[in-house]
Amino acid sequence: MTATIIDGKARAAALKAQVAEEVARLGGLGVEPGLAVVLVGDDPASQVYVRSKGTACRTAGIQSFEHRISADVEARDLIGLIDRLNVDPAVSGILVQLPLPPHLDPHVILGAMDPAKDVDGFHVVNAGALATGRWGLVPCTPRGCLLLLQETLDDLAGREAIVIGRSNVVGKPMAQLLLRESCTVTVAHSRTRDLPEVVRRAEIVVAAAGRTGMIRGDWIRPGATVIDVGINRGDDGKLRGDVAFDEALDVAGAITPVPGGVGPMTIACLLENTVEAARRQHGLPDPA
Ligand code: NDP
Image (cartoon, rainbow, N blue to C red; front, top):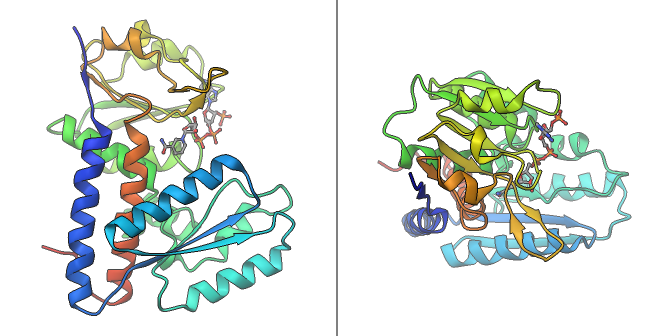
């Protein structure tokens, strides 16, 4: 069997086009979505991410505001900036690029954000909403993974799914989303015993451990759908996922590549969240 390669770039392009249409519709109603991205320090990878988020916003017609702050900023000054963004009517969404320098507690900094503007979906209010089945802004990467799964599989209900990784950013919200879709969900982590055997049961595998090629082809159930969230840069400068792609290709039913799988979906879902936040802030219903 050769797996179908799930084209995250194409799916993300379609979603971005949909977002651009919605931005135009909102413009007609006098609503202009805007995203404020806060970058603390000069981490090169973060700079690349922030730049690409700004470009994606502008392409979709969303206003983009960048705040570059020195790495030695004091927590109270950073919170002061977030306070101002919280009440700025031009700002529908706020994103604080992670990781933060070690002296800044991400829980405190992210907690200062108005949950209605938390387009990364990391605020405890949004995490709690997801866990309790209420409306909230959903973290972008897991949301992107879910959209790819929904496009690949007719019905998720009742399927055995495994999420490898339990971070607040990917693993936990991914598991919550799959549970919401009525999958039977296992969450694996570094203390999981006999991971290959646990992975072999799953029809859906979401790999988010940050370990290059850790998930081997012979761990995968034949025909399974494999979503590879991992982004690992090798010594050769190339990006690789958490799944041994060439091995998995012979066994899986469908698989996302790295790059070109989940990554583009993350940005598209960020734009979608920004527009959704703007709509909610103006009391507008979701588009039909
Ligand atoms: P974290 O480092 O926060 O979490 C990694 C998780 O993987 C932890 O729960 C850890 O377990 C688990 N883990 C680590 N090693 C193993 C192992 N050998 N066996 C089983 N579980 C293991 O990473 P993130 O969740 O932030 O990111 C995960 C990956 O996804 C990274 O490669 C990151 O670059 C990528 N990523 C990609 C995005 C995209 O847009 N495509 C967006 C965000 C992240 P434990 O809790 O026990 O330590």
